[in-house]
View 1 (cartoon, rainbow, N blue to C red):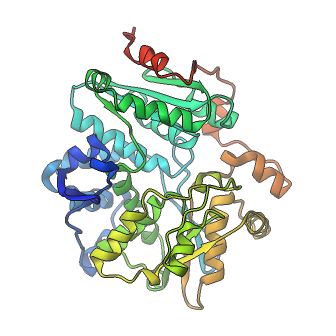
View 2 (cartoon, rainbow, N blue to C red):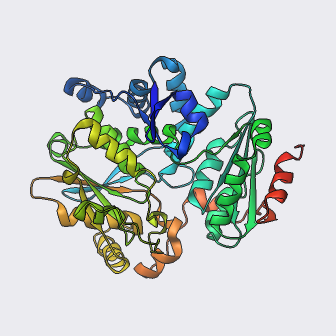
View 3 (cartoon, rainbow, N blue to C red):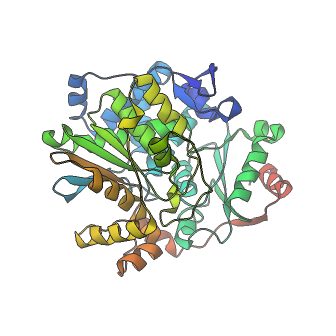
Amino acid sequence: MKLYNLKDHNEQVSFAQAVTQGLGSQQGLFFPHDLPEFSLTEVDDMLEMDFVSRSSKILSAFIGDEIPAEILETRIRNAFTFPAPVKEVQSDIGCLELFHGPTLAFKDFGGRFMAQMLTHISGDKPVTILTATSGDTGAAVAHAFYGLKNVRVVILYPRGKISPLQEKLFCTLGDNIETVAIDGDFDACQALVKQAFDDEELKTQLGLNSANSINISRLLAQICYYFEAVAQLPQEARNQLVISVPSGNFGDLTAGLLAKSLGLPVKRFIAATNANDTVPRYLENGKWEPDSTRATLSNAMDVSQPNNWPRVEEIFRRKIWRLNELGYAAVDDETTASTMRELNDAGYVSEPHAAIAYRALRDQLHPGEYGLFLGTAHPAKFKESVEEILGQTLDLPEALAERAELPLLSQFLPADYAALRQLMMKPRD
């Protein structure tokens, strides 16, 4: 598999290099050189397969012979150990629930596949994953790499600035997972990570990798659940399918567009954002004018400069699709809350991100079409706001309940690179 850097098309790398490197020069994103396509018959046959077998065929189409098919299938089986069910919300709308993994969020698919790929590529060579998190990414990365041989994971997070349940989810694991609470905000954590990656001695000695969410392996993994969704739909729904994607960094939408590029029958996509509406405004007036980021109920989508947008534009350019065919909507907090109550009255408990996608879908679905919206996280991950909006108490799912009473194993550090460096270089027991 060859990939090129969107900021320098002359920089071309293999899949293994792209996974290990993460980003190209000038912080450029990697993008597949070839965009494979399945025939209609192949797609129909694939939709009859089980999730793992189908995912192996999808990912093999991109990765090629760089990883032998049987090894790839074993790695996928290790990664995708949980379902992605479609739940009916009303007769013509379903929710693709992506929160049945160990950390109750869609990031489990990409995080776990990346962990499998990185450990395969690294072999016996020790690897250190260093990443910063504002909550969800840290949990997905921690659980994905937990217990894997020759991998050390160091996760920085802002002390006192993530929810107690989020903290419990990844700061109670121990073993090869080290969590560090930094006295500062998320930006301070991110700045420390960047300093570490500029430190050549540290990078070389520890074999540093960031497990960043824009890593190509995480993106490719997300294509698989779009096929899994369509496989669960009746034929008449497949023929008139509209998918609404809650969008912050636009990775999920990118994966959906790659699924369509492969031949998955999707009539159109809707990019649903919150008040951070850079993309909806751009699609409206053709001007890329990011505002400062606004805090909203759907905080995982509080992104004003989405990292994956260049990949979205590249797919449209390469496929000669028209960007004005992409649906869009920006949904404010008040509408988000009223939509959550509307869904609850209809018998479906949802959280802010999914509610935004549902609202955009409901408003733009035409008669005869079937709509799917993505449920990217379990409502209990946003327990406080969901309970307040719906006026009811949520039960904790098992994945959260079993960690809620465990002691935190985090270390505490100031927002100081020398202190972090000392911790990283200290010999482990």
